[in-house]
Length: 100
Length: 388
Image 1 (cartoon, one colour):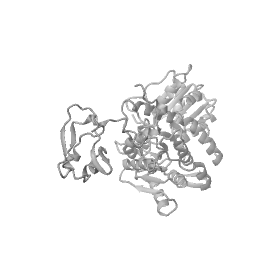
Image 2 (cartoon, chains in turn purple, red):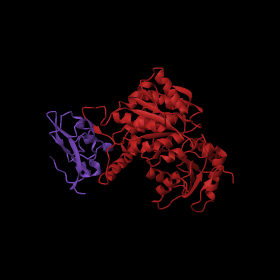
Image 3 (cartoon, rainbow over the protein chains, first blue to last red):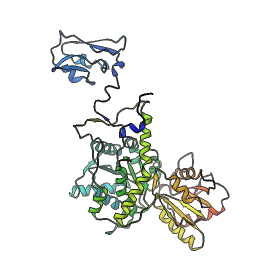
Image 4 (cartoon, helix red, strand yellow):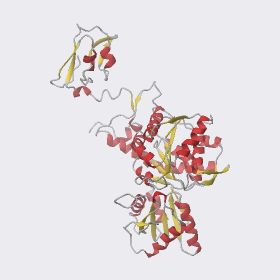
């Protein structure tokens, strides 16, 4: 377990600063189904962004631009909530983490 | 100011003077009076504490954990089954290093259901990571409630602290108690210093994060370091409190006529008061006997206990609860403490006082009189006041 911190270096009570777990836990590796965004059908209502439990819908300039596949667990909430069927769930074959 | 008050009132007065930000509490006999007194203080506007009247003890301690993580000074109180319900959360409070101070009005655990005093509830929390202190009297319950706050909140410790006081024997009997004025207490307790408070929204943090096999062990080792810091902090706080109060607290335990004793008792809580009378009566007859009464039970001050009883011929360790299937928990602490000595006293373990069974001076004199007859360690449990 090289590179991991010793017990004296840990924060009191295991309390960690906000946003620090993101770089350590690539939860995208858990995904069984991958959401695919069809931009042509998307009306930018941002319901997917609002409902995503893992903050994995990427916004740029207030617009949906794709998914953070490093952290998306493939729950499918975005596809279920999308009013225009612009998000499709497809089987995750390789399990590798790929940014769009 | 000296007042004639119950142990409960003494604890409630200490809480009033500490005036924590949050008190979350659920009533249970014999503790309920602490909650009732404190509710009076809140609703009469004497304190500005947020009193959270929860639906169970699990919720009481959960509310304390949340409030402490939010950045508040918090206290609670319970007994017996209430503590049993709290235990899940007590481990969490300790693991998160939250300085929750709790009065535990000791009462036996069910079944059979019983409302009277023994130490089975304290023993249930033995390995929880909470610091545990035992009071002999209402005065000690008051004093240690004030000191507990400082011990719990010390940055080297940051752990929950339980102040044990025997149900009914201490909680409901009226005793003379010297109360300090409010100002010196407030100065002694000081301002609460939060660590990573949740309400500091400019610095968001995660409390209660998951830890996998790669970090869980290190975090628990760090928690053990908090416990290891307690003895030094305990002595510092005692020293300062002795100056503030004029009452002498020095050491992890009270050693009563122990220095030249040939036979000794080790006992927690109010029974130590009874034992002192037994010691005095036997001393008057020329028998060299003494008493060791731990104030600090967790962490257990093993080395100091060993040094204090090393010269004694035989020691009776009295446990007011079974640790079913093995010897008493206090006995095992003392036995382990004495093991490194080259010349060890003979040991015997007595179980006494379960479910509030009375323990008398003649009972304890009988124990002292049995000790000289022991020629080797007694590994079978002995019982005081049990009908065969």
